[in-house]
Image (tube, rainbow, N blue to C red; front, side, top):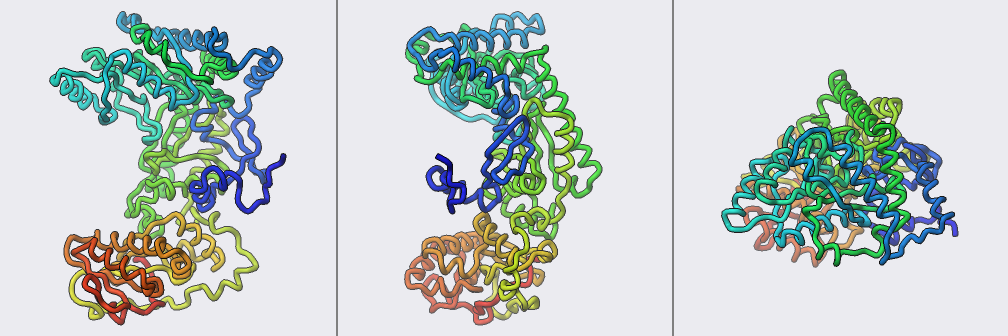
Length: 609
């Protein structure tokens, strides 16, 4: 049965994740990829993209590697059962042997007796990285009979020592210390040199197991088989996944030393699908390919990773605009992060400054603008680090070529102003643009309320857009070339992504802008529209701890005039005792009448600055 590609709402959006689907659509990330090969993806329109995300590292050999399809076809011919527990599993046994031997071969480069004694000896399989980490924790707890869970700052060996000493002084101790050699979702953060060696020594000293989470870093991504090998240590337990799949079949694994073995754990821990023959044989071939030719793919990861880092640094040195917004490039091998500034002053009087002010580049649903630009304009697929969203993660397949790296570096050059970054979201000019002229703001010289239009003290005015074109006033220089129709398209998407923001106008008055039009607020449910207004009021109130008058007007009057809105308004006033809300309605105990000069529903400031 063919998928209905012309349906108004994609089936994934309808039945799987409507929340993310809406954000993807607003940010221009709602692609439907239908084909892939090597380092490229192709969408339903036939456009090809250079894939520099590679499934967050789960596609190490490129898409659809022939060598792994050969494994699938061989399994089809052999008729080996895929799921057959309880039994002696040939595929699982062979993959375990390959992983243990590869880890030993990569790690045996010194005569450290303690290290030689602590060798990874056994493997157990799971279905994902999450499961692998869970199973590693269960193994540690079963082995030590210790429970409890706490966080400690990454990269801070002194803080870890303090935790261990505190536990010891209380007559207890932790089961294990779980750490990523390089933080992935945390923003591709590399710890200080020697950190893992200190961690290994501390864990040994205090009798705590060391678990290395190599879900993202493992199997060649950093230029070594495992990232912990850069510090020349051996953990007690290692969690693997992503690259082990070869981009073909979900699988996870843990490797562990003989000292960690627990009969209780081995007797009880089981999974219907883990250790299945097809997944393990694909994993085995993946390990063979990554380690083949004396680790040629791992060397390529090291060389191309250094080339990319040097290239980004060269761009920063030669391009003043790029240097102004790029904060750092970090990582090892082909696990790189490019961090962009999240400070408003970096971008001057630009809409990009507004995005930075409300941490647009640090929140998931807004930070995707740079990824969206690279995807739609440059044809390169990237993603942001989940917990540090102003960082672009660069994780191409281990087979990436120098030419492909050059393509990426060329695309990374400065996009210019906010208009350049978001033009693809506005779409092309259409024949309907002439009919949109009525939406354009024609009065560019609106005066702001005079200082006599309100009582003394701090005042903040909460305003929404009258029409889509009022978004142009946010940054007229960047959006000058956009037609009214394009502004309508762009603003509709931005309103789904943005939250209210605070600014001070050129005349010195303070505003909080709600990124929705009057029409949107009036057509939404009262709960939704008042929720946006409440968010704006809270932001206005947070600008000071002193008494403040918050004016609600500029297109909000019809929403506020609804009977049920009065109760919600009173609740807003009560929630911020130092603030007094003003509006065009009769006053109540917690709100007052809105000053006449500010009650004009057509009022909108001439610019943010």
